[in-house]
Length: 516
Image (cartoon, rainbow, N blue to C red; front, top):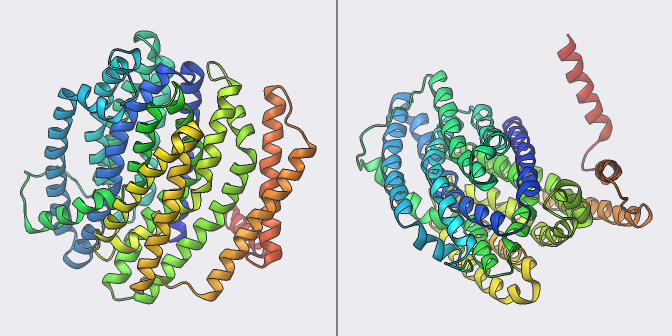
């Protein structure tokens, strides 16, 4: 599981780095204003449906069923089920896409109520949304094919295919802008084109795995009905985070112009650890838990889940400390260029700190949710999710006036903390989550190591003031990040969580094997 975790995490990290480059181009060319706000709203709509119908509810319902059929009935039956599911999905999504294209002005009034109907942002957002909306069909179909590959334990190619989104997006911004009215149109067309490339790559990978997925004529077979029954409640249960972010966007459109953009770029930095660790944990844990539970290996299932919790906290907690301390310099170095001013970067850093508070909770939700899905329970996360949605909305209303662009991120973070607490309590009551005393001590030591690292960085930052000039700033930030990593490693070694000598010995043995 650790190998698959690192494989998915590695490819996802590369994708996030390319995504960072893409976001830097968006910030430099469009800044934080009406043009950027319109594009972000246009992208939020298909991206939300992708997370809900593709990576979220559908994947949570499909992967356990597919893995179970593959284990018990063989490849032929599993392939037929996947092709039938793909046929049903495509018909439903094409219908939804056509409706969206027709009624896009009405949809925008719902998800962007702050955009004046007579204003520039509203008209531009409608046009851009109509360009990006077909991405919904393409990427949801791609998520199903990726789910099949994950069920076949081909995690690498499924994760690698998502690089296409950022590669195509960067190319569109750099090379297509001169042929279109503005950069926002180029970025929007890049979104849809990337969906074509991703789906094509994944279908090719499935074909190479001798698992062709030509869709079958839609039919509501008993197994498809079971899939739908499990999927529908999961639309809320597995998509709480995305729905909360969409609520944040809705509230953001009611704030001053540029607020949506400030929150977006803050969320993109927050998504680096969240996307890498959350995606890796959820993607690799679900089929592992499903296999152990199907075989009646409950102790192994508990062990796998505890290892996943340990891995993500070991890597998430230092990220939280680093983001809280270095949010300002990070945003200035990465985005404070071109049309995105240094003042905009500092405002976005405030939103980043608010998001970072909830980062461990956001990631742990990805670890706890598969424990329900692997047991065929997609309803319980729904009931929790509905309550979390209401809480997030109320907190947004409470914070939006006094905290402005920091309000929605802080509301999402607090709601995520409540969400993960509820899921953990429910799992423990059902004896589906057992954390030993040693594991608890390990988590406390990890938190202390991350906290100490953050305190030392605060002291160093007070002595070594953030310099002027891009090159000096990059060197300063790189030095601080490197110092934080070294300090964290030392504190982990001193606390007994990891042994530095053992790690060096393992690295040396692996290098020797490669040389030989």
